[in-house]
Each structure stands twice: as structure tokens, then as C-alpha cells.
Length: 271
Image 1 (cartoon, rainbow, N blue to C red):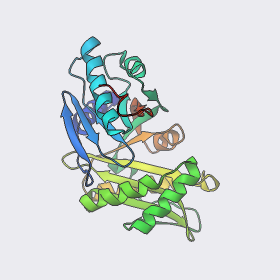
Image 2: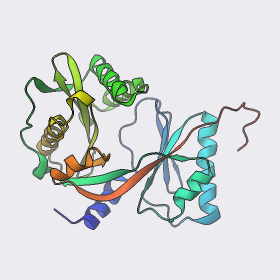
Image 3: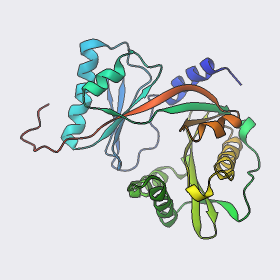
Image 4: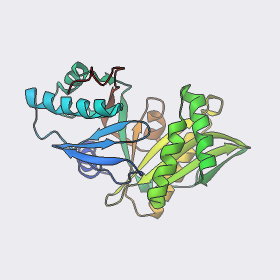
């Protein structure tokens, strides 16, 4: 497999600054180097490959425009900052504009062939691909139990995304009897060498039994069947060690910077 710097270049080129599957009502808008996604159930998103050398006042103006757009919509949004993004003070400028950083995640990449195989599960647990709203609702309930916050938007998002392109998204649950104990999904990014892995949350009582590992291996096998070369994950501190034991390689980190609309009247809002 290529080294970390080569993988980072491939990741930047193939995955960043693009959007493929947009549910009904969600739109992508180009603003200079930024790709702005508006109208999503859980808030908007900004993506880019790089910022075309913008810095100083010009960069502050670009940031302010995004705040203006989402402020008028009354919509929260995420600016996903990578550790190697420039300029170096971008995070400070986002904070000055009212963004709040969340937990850092590590971008890890693996060769599909090195991860794919037969998943090994503990007794009483099975994997199943799911496609209907009832199962998406069950996943959302499980996620709410893990994160202690409303996750109903997740079921909406999965259903809407599959409605647009069902071949681009496969959702997998691990079940113990009637209970969903872990769930993850894989996006097959058209026109790239990448399949990207998402989710993977596991109920606390079922952790450290190899279930997350198994659901990664299963999705890797799906990617192998479709001819993809790489797997990519935004890994939490909990999942990163498991993924590294599966030969995933860390290439950079990401920090979600979140802007949320203040509670103001239309008359008070000035852009």
C-alpha cells in the first residue's frame, strides 16, 4: 500500500470538494473554492479541496458569506477543517466568526484487499443488510441510546439518500435477537477508488466482542466485490486502534467546526 503522504494526496484529489448523492430538497452551491450544501435534515456542510491561497481579509469575507447564507436560512452547518489545510490560522478565524470546534477525528485509509474477508462474530450475533425505514428507525434508537441525544434525523437521512441512489449506499446492522447492537454503512463513491465507512456505534454492553471489527470487514468485502481499491474512515479515538490493527493508516486529522444560528429576530439579522 502507498505511504501516508501518497494516500493523503489521493484522498484530497478524489474525495474532497465533491458531492455525489443529494437527497430531495438538498442543494450544492459553489462559492469560490467552497462547495456549500444546504437544506440537509441535520444541517449544512462546507467542503473544499483547498482554499486557493485565500488568507487574511479575503478569507474572513469568504467565511462571513457562509455565515450570512446559513443565518438567513436559520440552519446550522459544519466547516470540516483538516490538519493540513492552509492557512495555519484558519481554525482561529473560524472561532472568531462564531464556530465551535468538536472532537478531533483521524482520517485513516486501508487497502480494501487487506481488510476484506469473512467477519467473525460472537455467538448469538448476526449481520444483515437493511433497506427499509423501520430498520433505519431502529438504528436511530440505538444511536440515541449511545449518544444520549436525538438521532431521528439519521433515519431520515439514510432513507432519503437511498431513495436517490440505492446502489451507492449499503447499511448493515449487527443484531442480537431482536436488538440492534451495532450499525454501519458504506458509501461507494462513484468515479473514485474509495468506499467510505460511516457509523459503527456499538451499544456499551456489546463492546470489546469484535462486533465493530466484523462490521468493518463485512463492508470491506462489499467494496472488494465492486472493485474499489481503498477504504476511508473518519475515526474516533475509540475506533482508531481497532482500524489500525486492520492495517488502516492515519493520514491526517479533521475537526468539525460547527456554526449554529443564534436566536434572533429577522429585524436583528444583518448580513
